[in-house]
Length: 238
Image (cartoon, rainbow, N blue to C red; front, top):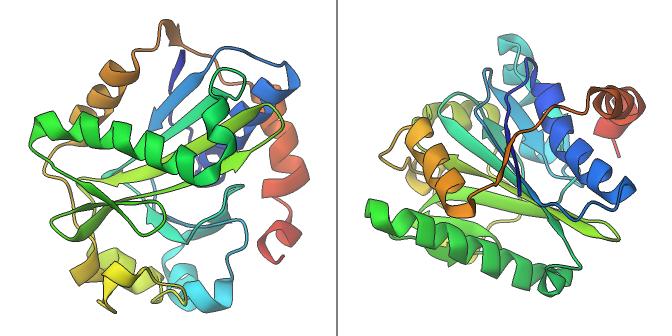
């Protein structure tokens, strides 16, 4: 497994890099899995592939505060990222992990690994909804996936030192809600894990134990994807 302990300068570059790693693995038929861990430097709203700005985002507040509104390649709901939120991404070869051809199996398997990572820290989570990790009945992690012919990208968030009040400012209550939410407002629904970003990052690295040192960003492929998709206004209004 290749490690990418890599945070880029801008929110759009960071969101695009996950898909870039997936595309590079697909194009080169790479058998080497990779783990990316990073912490955003700025706040950004990130929609799922089919998310709708008018239903999920307080756009005037984002514009007033200069918070970028982005769209990722995977499905799932809209999230607010920023300092204090650990982001992780796995790119896995489907020949080596054939069970991940099934979406729910992929969610359940990787989230169960995350549960195992957090348990020694006395953070005992459960899987709720479709792909949430819940601690003491509050969401601490949201996750989503994107699968290509030969690989799957699985990525998500771990809230640990995040300013939770900002979620209510920039996100609306989503139209699709898991049953366990029970119509709770954001501040009653989400929570931080009581560890630092660095502590959780090291726990993930120790668990997946990447054997290859920190990889170089595939800058040419990243720039191409930024030009063709992530910096195209049409990508944000499907």
